[in-house]
Amino acid sequence: MFTITPILLAGGSGTRLWPSSRKNFPKQFMQLTTNETLFQQSAQRVLGSDGLKFNPHIIITNSQFRFIVVEQLQAIGIKPRRIIIEPEPKNTAPAIIAATIFAQKDNKDAVIITTPTDHVISDTKNFHKVIKIGLNEIENGKIVTFGINPSYPETGYGYIQVDKSSRQGPNNVLKFIEKPDEMLAKRILDEGNYFWNSGIFMFRAKDMISAFELYAKDIISNVVKSVDQSVEDLSFTKLDGSYWSNLKEISIDYAIMEKTKNLVAIPYYSGWSDLGNWNSVWQISKKDDNGVALSQNAHAIECKNTLLRSDSKDQEIVGLGLENIVAISMPDAVLVANKNKNQDVKKVVEYLNSKNISQSEEFTKDYRPWGSFEILCQGKGFKVKKINVKPGASLSLQSHKHRSEHWVVVQGSAVVTIDENVKVIGPGQSTYVRLGSLHRLENQEKNMLTIVEVQIGTYLGEDDIIRYEDVYSRK
Image 1 (cartoon, helix red, strand yellow):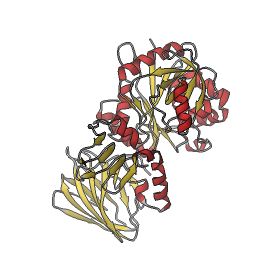
Image 2 (cartoon, rainbow, N blue to C red):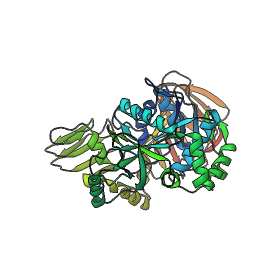
Image 3 (cartoon, rainbow, N blue to C red):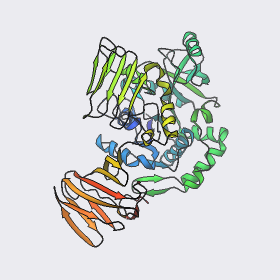
Image 4 (cartoon, helix red, strand yellow):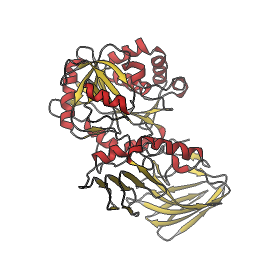
């Protein structure tokens, strides 16, 4: 029996599910369909089952998400083999071959499955069945992709054209087609020998490395050097940035799959969605007889074919007389869109970026390795935050050039270092951090520490931090 090494791609920063998904906390880490995030579901999908065995996961992500990855894996009891940190995003081709090289270092005969972590696959049992079919092709040196049976003429997905030899078993791939217009999508559906491109691939490590050496020498050359110069930092493997920066951004489809002669597609007929827009979220959501899908804290009156979602337990959203509408409510931003225009939500993000509006990419809540903070209010010369510090966690020893801070403990017990002084303060107590003072906040208790921080200064950006000591090795 083959033991498969799963490679999870977790570095993406999608914009089409704005405002819930943003650059600093994208959709793979969100709870969109269940109480588990898409990333957690993806990790659980490649655990062992009858007749199928998986090695521990290899994860590739970026520095910003590395502690989110660890925290979400720990929450579901998964310990990965390796978490690889990309110095900068370069799309899927460099990411996949870097992780593949590490997998082959562990086992020269490694068999690999690579998968995005922001998709929904509702039937893991059937997914494992098609993986078993793919293993037979792997033995013959094939690279395998999994084609999704198209149920409607979707313009937001890429397609794979296959020969018509079989609608059940492996098919030779003829070509890839980028996201088509509506007319072409309808024709593709009528012709019948096309699948949606799932972006999931399975192969022997040596076959993928050979494909890169044949079709993408410049990519694998720089990736090999970046891997050779990588360093271990805490529980992460950091790729070398100098060689990585020489790489062009390119997908595995363009770099390899459209060129290789040994690619086969195996059909998958059970539920799948890449949740690429709010309409796709509506499609897989539970709906009433009028086609209305609601989150908690969402209410509909005389609405049809509508998605109403509130991502805040303290915020209600109500729709009245809506039809074919998506309305997404966040504490700091609201999207209201025609359901048929959801492929264009990225234009909203581009527009907000052009206006330098921070909500285009950032939440008022920011996740850090020690916990999180949430901006409660801000104005000229001041900012108020709620800060949560996890049990046993510690902020860095740091100072600021442009601001002072006033801390008030709301819950728990804080160990506070200010210059040479160390003290413990509890609920209702406070302390003041002068501009330029070295300071640190620690939670040495078993429960969450919550403080309210008031910043006052001429500049209040998150980059006004000079770190002297940090248990998380941040600069």
